[in-house]
Length: 467
Image (cartoon, rainbow, N blue to C red; front, side, top):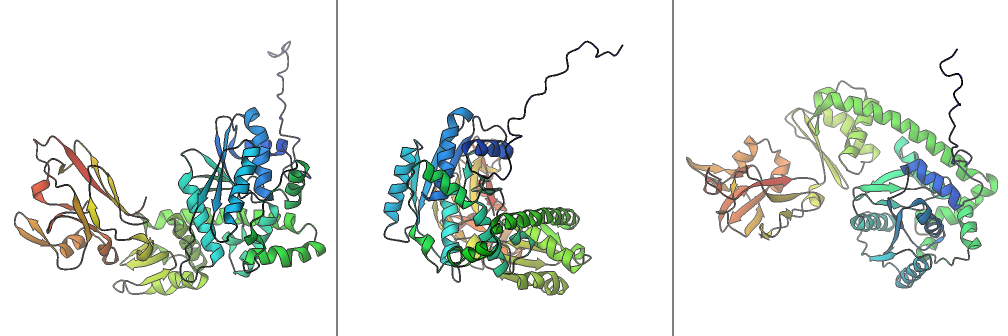
């Protein structure tokens, strides 16, 4: 007799999400609950924050989440960003906050100022400022949810085509991402805008549309108002088909990233790349690796022309030429056999000089992507009892000399001996007491302030070029 004979067959647990389609014909809270479970697992105990404009899309998302929070056991709040670009923006912010109160969801209004870099569109500057503001307000472990939907994906794909984007750009909007170091979710991507509009109107919710959404100076608005109605008249399923294409391209990009990671492991020299290894790759392989590697450094991608220069002339240059290619927000430098990607000096170091009270502030900011810190460490080499406070933070001007027991050491020689590339030397912070240089970042410390065996209070300097 079989060992299992006479035993009751195990009860198969029903999959409560199995009958919920990935792309529904109607948006409802039950579908959103299944979607959340597919993206993050069980939502119980999670903290969710909605980027809430007060428009139709984000209102549908917030309202549906509000009906689910008790049953699914997550915490919910909203953030509204007031860009201040129109006189009515305060009214829109007040209307969004009132609508969130009606849904019994806490809502905070973030007022920001949009600053444009030279050559940057107002649309891009506003988007960057918005995400920066949202990211700064998120708590560790919290998830930010945005209401991007199927029609947004179509618009993004068309805009990418008009910019001549490659596979990464044409992959469109991803359902997952990060902002400010925390998770970002876009659960509504399979949903059409018309479905969200029906959901909102059926519940009698009054939305406030930002007037900027009707401003056809912005490329996305022009597409939305002038181009997409004609596309849908001819091809009613345009948004769904574009989403399918974006999904295929995202899959292709995933394979390209996998290839780039393999090549990067072979070429890696710390956070840099070895030019000799890159030269052995074909041109398409080089460009694919450079795109992936630059993106992993947290830098914006360069345009197609500069990328071709990087993969060709820059790698072919003489070893002693030290060529450089810069683009908005990033810079690529070659030093011998090493290739370094970095934030543009104008963006990376704000050269924030001043008096640093290191006993009250452990870290001193040096710009968007750098800082100097003095952290307690019982094995540290800094004698905190003898170290002056405050210290003046400054930067190299040229000709500085450091006090050594055997005489004087040129700062230039120290930086060269420590392997600091010439283009980074101006960003190395100097800590001074009066006219005396006490420390050079975490590279050198005056012997007068080095901890001896009897030192009771010790610390260690830490210089960070990026967070």
